[in-house]
Image (cartoon, rainbow, N blue to C red):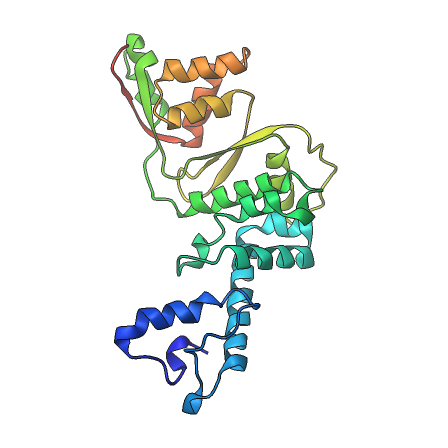
Length: 269
């Protein structure tokens, strides 16, 4: 049942009022059928509205399942769909594009009472959301090693990088990268020590999305570069936290991953 098919709705001048009333109860079955919704001959349309409401909820749950397949595999179908239903009631969609729905799902999982025994689940969901956002990000040409080689050595410390539109960084106190990778396919999952902290770099230099497991200090370094800190300042932040951080190896890895699109010398301090 489409909203346009319901008889007795207000004129076009009242369309926004009608649409607001129609949608207000769509994701919450506890709310009554809006008074403006009527069937043939002006009769109440509660049953028809409930069918439509259920179809909307099912479509949104399916959209979340498509976006978070690892979370679905970890929790199982019944748990996931129940959790998703509560999330939908709390956070209805604001865009007609289904792939945009679910930006708040990881935050919901983090406070979802029944997921407390899986504290790493929310960060796994964050990686999955970042994967989808990277997939839909704009195309751009990443920098190559030659771009850095052309910079005079005395200007390297001042380099400021521009991130690729698909670049995402997810930090976790849990083994979220390993859990994500192990549950995105259909193969058997071996025992994982979830207590080991892991950080992820998500990139899409061309057509495919890649999730990279970052070494200690790399997430701090890359986050500083994404925030437009000069290369030397970003390196200092990483080295303060991880004295063994390998700057050269990380720079080479981020270029290979296609994480940035340009590097230009900034103003010397």
